[in-house]
Image 1 (cartoon, rainbow, N blue to C red):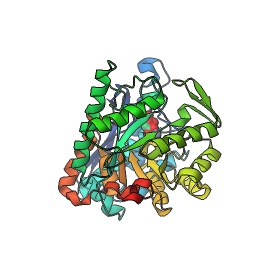
Image 2: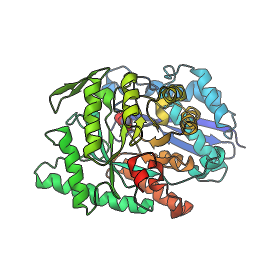
Image 3: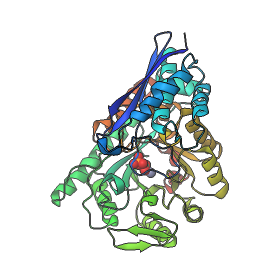
Image 4: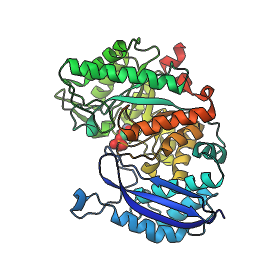
Length: 432
Ligand code: PGA
Ligand code: ZN
């Protein structure tokens, strides 16, 4: 009864209006699971590839080949398999395409299939997805502390500012509900400031305000002003988190900050970020240098790793082997986990486990191209990941994930909120 009876892929559309794949898995018992592949815009070079048609229709983004792979070889290989063994299912997918970047099947095809199977296993067990994940992977569930974007930038906002994500965290909150309330106040305070300056111009790809600033640092100054306008003291209940997404600026010693009309060496970039760490209450910084600039990442971690969370996103692409290497190197102290970056649930869990066993922090993350799929909220809670990043506080593909956490909070109890404990390695955690 727990075997896969049918597996079907269909074309649906993501939050940017681009085509993507959805997979439905139906079991012999009648239980079913569904998942939609997300899509990144600032993608790491080592990520699993999104398989897209190369013809001119839909700006080269159509997914008919990925769908053919789901409805053909993947459906055939998985037919009759028991969904209670996620590793075996993922292994069957990998044996069709052993390439680390899923060039043959497409990471979009594999991740939607793998996640749909996880959903079906949860439904078969009569459990919420988060509870199935916690039980299956033997983790203590907890509601994560969100990172929430206030201004979008980089590849998500026409490169209007160079830095990609200006975010807040509310580690001083005692419940997920409180985080939402504080975030709403800060988000709209930021919008009011933009309106008062006559520079309100809509929102970026992940729902953060479109950043009409004269310099990158002005975004930080405005974020501080918004936190204050919301009645908060920056650095207390509310702190700042940045995703530099530095691979989008360059690599290996040549980084362009176009808005500031500056070209920086790796050392210059480290100096600039170090200055911001001194001047602003920043607790977390993602991809501070380029994905191939290992020496600079090691140096950045050596200098600042005891006072700030340093997350590898493009630098690690959710791959266990790269996490292991970075732990050995002393590069980063936390990992961003994006299942579609690596292509299957089991591989994402492997990277997650590698990070936690190395004493690292973990942040489960959505992509800039998203959908109504909320599995990411369940994965973060079920794995007890402590942190979750899904974009801003507007646009339904973002709010769906936050709202799902509120529903999970009702099931799990407000006391299960991870809060600021996950920032214990930063100055914020140490001063509490
Ligand atoms: P992406 O960006 O989904 O466009 O790659 C998200 C991130 O860099 O964290
Ligand atoms: Zn990132």
